[in-house]
Amino acid sequence: MLDGNPLQIVSALMAVDTSAMDPRATLAHIASLVDAAGDAGFADGLDRAEALLDELAVKPAPPAVSARSHYCRANLWAHRHELNGGRGSWAWSDPVAEAELLELRRCVRHTGFSALGQIERAQALTNLANRLNSIGRFVEAVEVWDRALKVEPRLAMARGNRGVGLTAYARALYDDGHQAVLLAHAWRSLRAAAAADALIETEGLEPAFEQFSRYQCSIENYLDPEVVFAGLDLTAWPLGRSSAEQRYRSWCLDHRLFLNPLNDLGAYPLAARDVLTLPTITTPLSQADAPAIIRFFNVLKQEYVSARYTFYEGDDASRMHFSDREVLLYNTLDYPALGLAVERVKTAYRAAYSIFDKTAFLLNNYLELGHAERQITFRTVWYRSARSQALHPKLDGLANWPLRGLFWLSRDIFEAGFQAASDPDAEALHELRNHLEHKFVTVHSEGIGLGRVGAMEPGLIEITYDDLSRRTVHILKLARAALLYVSLAVHSEEERRRANDREAKLSVPVPLHVWEDRWKHHF
Image (cartoon, rainbow, N blue to C red; front, side, top):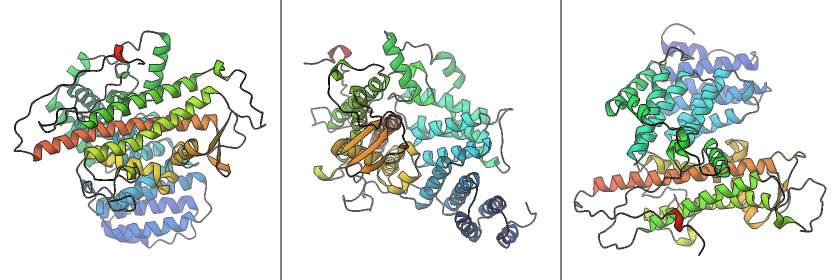
């Protein structure tokens, strides 16, 4: 790097002619310009770097260079976000943050990503998790930080940012016990960032380490993490009575599919219970019945756990079911996958997907958004109307982190730009659901070149069983995240309402009793 005044360094880098450089050298130069312009707060330098990236994008380049260029462009947008004062903003629609998120996803899903160095891949995943966390998708962010640490377990930024994210996640919870466990694990991650074996991949990270230290101290001032760890063994819990139940619960833990925040810490047996509920709800004294939102959430939760098991049952099947015996079907010579097991996977996909529109209905009711019942969808509930792209006035700028995460989750499913930048298993989720519900989906046991969802004939999608299975797991993960965000968004809103309604000092607790397992049967 050149020595001297930061602006002089940027000016010198901007003056370099890259036309004769090979793609690798060009990208290395652009990366230096992005870092220098960002550190100097010089927007013109970032603009020049973007122009060079645009020029590089139309030239032939090795896959690793193309993947790295997306990472470089993401860093450029991150610097612009800082220059625009984006940190701490509650604006839900943020084009700069959106651009960074999409570029990081393009990097991670690029065919050249695997050719990047170990540290580069871990850095890209860490930055992706950081951005997901900032927009409220903290459930998914934790899993991406864990992916980064699988690539490079020593990376200090992954350890520390995971600790910051878990701290914020814990503070969003309403359950004191869960909050303590998440804070203890956050403290462990924060401390690991400064451990002797931690890998500090670049210079200039002192502000980040200062932040990690502040978070660690704030946790220590709130509780003693060592006491939490000493008093609770997350592994010493039974997984069920039968071997079949134990296998099922282990599978759910491994895929992080339990409605339990502790499952986001890992596959700990203690987390193998769907304990997530809604927080305490304040209603008028004149309301005699339980709030409608509790009934809605009960149904959503039951439908989710049933969809989860339906998928497991179909995916785990090794034999033909007797209901398929003597069902006359023809061999279409394209390796068809037919039978009850496949239909169970399809059913699980449809059931998990249906949770999104029902979530929108719950939000419309609880937040009193005023949408007509026939117009409520997960795609449109956030806006003034079904035909408007303006955010609903009750939501725009609302300081509700989980609710904002739910909004961004909806964009993943319905917006083409987000779908194209998502991982392949997340692409075309809506299209697949639409064909499952209203048209035709044929499943094949072998690939025969059908690596992605694609319409081969009007009204027909062909897909391999492996792709269908992965996409169903993905939709289950999104449905789980949505239910967690809903619960914690309601908690945030209840806290806000109680803080604003200072005159409503009289409250009478009305406990609701648990619906016992022995009552869960057919009538």
